Every structure is written in structure tokens, then in C-alpha cells.
Length: 290
View 1 (cartoon, rainbow, N blue to C red):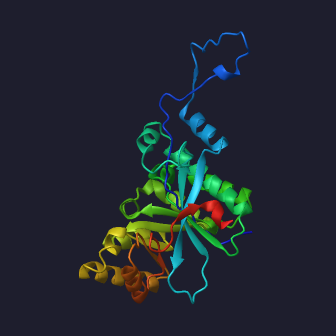
View 2: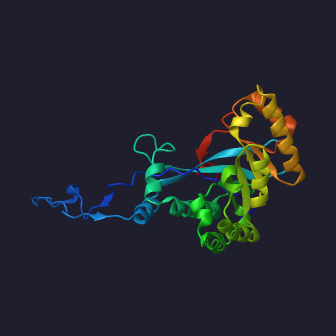
View 3: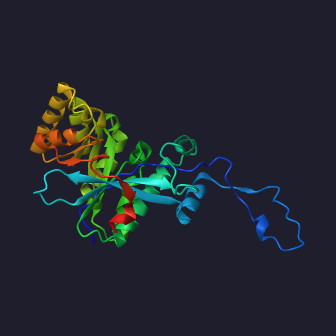
């Protein structure tokens, strides 16, 4: 069993408007029989469209490794997971193309659950050679759903996995202002053993509020701060100060969008726990890790 993991996913979804299921196809017609299209084709619901994509394995798990900067400390393999739609030309569809359509069809919450299930299924068969952490970003719609915590518990328990397999990332602005209706899910998932991460943290008062609200184990430092470390003394000071606070309370820091070797050296000197970016590791199919 793979233990101590956590999960994060970008959401890329196919166009859904006008998607219909036909009873037959022209090329399957018998010789001499004229094909007549169904005058009233079945229009699929949003949930049916998504179920079809999952069943036909059109949704593909990709990831980017998040590297531990202190090599002397033994740590699980941390992977930031994203979802791609299988494309006709290059094998995937780029992020953001279908988000508006998915939101209009109210698919985001359902998609979160399918991503969790797919990631947990991967954990059942993966053999990466060490413990794994996967990072997933559920939508606020999911965090507010009354049955979300029970869904996660059922998905984890049903596969006999350690609940620590999931680290649910919530952005700083959302986490620092979570409505009271979200607290039962947060508390239930914390008791279950799931991890939480504050995403896009600005190393400010809002970041500390978000960490307290989620009882977070990870704080992902915003790439806008990380990319300015060299040229902006204020960014360097904020990141260093936030890192000291996090390390003192047992929260791991993750620097996002590290794309320069000099930035990476500064992060190591500051003592940041993890780094993620093109200068660290490229995106790969999750299957690459087992």
C-alpha cells in the first residue's frame, strides 16, 4: 500500500454544448440500406457527458514533480497532478479551453470527484519505489457540498488507502474567507487524516488566516512572489519571514513557478521545503511514476 500521499489537479474539460449520442453511425449501415439520422437524437445530461469521458478514458492524469530542497531529509515523492483531455493531434488539450463550458454545465463538482477517483485508482497499482504525495485543488463547490467529506472517506476506505493520500489545496483568498458551511467538511476531512494546502499564498496576514482555517500542512507560495525574489527585496523578505513561521509550526512551504537557477539557490538558502517549476521538473504523464 502506498501511504502518506496528497493530491492536486488542474481541471481541463471538453466542450459539452451540442454533445449528443447517436443510435447508429453511417459507416456501420448495411450495404444497400440508406442511413437515416435519428430526427430526435438523445441529448446527454452534463453528468452523462462526464461519465462518458471517464468511461472512455478521455481524461488523462498528468503531473509535475515537486522537489524537496533539503536532500538530507527523507520525504515522499510529491506530485502536482493535472487533468488533460485526450486530443486528436497532440494527445492532450491545453488548460483553460473548456472551463467556461464546464462551469455553465455545473460539472465542476462532479469533475472533482472523478479526478479523486482516478487518482486513487492510480495509487492502487503504482509502484514508484517510495511513498507518494499527490496535490489536488477541489473547487469551492465541492468544499461546500454537504456530502463531500463522506464521498472522500468512502473513496479512500473503499480502496483501503491511507487517508493521507490526499492533500486538498484551496487558494488563499478562498481559504481565508471560508463560509461557516464549509467547516464541517474541513473538520471531517482533517479527522479522517487528509492533508490541506493553502494555494497561491502571498505570505501575508491572509496566508496565516488561511493556514489556521484549514489547519494546513502545506503552504504553496505564489509564483508571482517567487519569480521576483532576485529583483525585489520586499518579496525576498516576505518569503523568508513566511517560511520561518511555517517551519516553526510544522507547515511545509512549496515555492511555485521556479524557472531560474538563481531563484532556486535563494530558496535553498532561505530554507523553503519544496520547489516546483520548469527549472526543476517538466510535466509528465502520471504513469511515468509507475
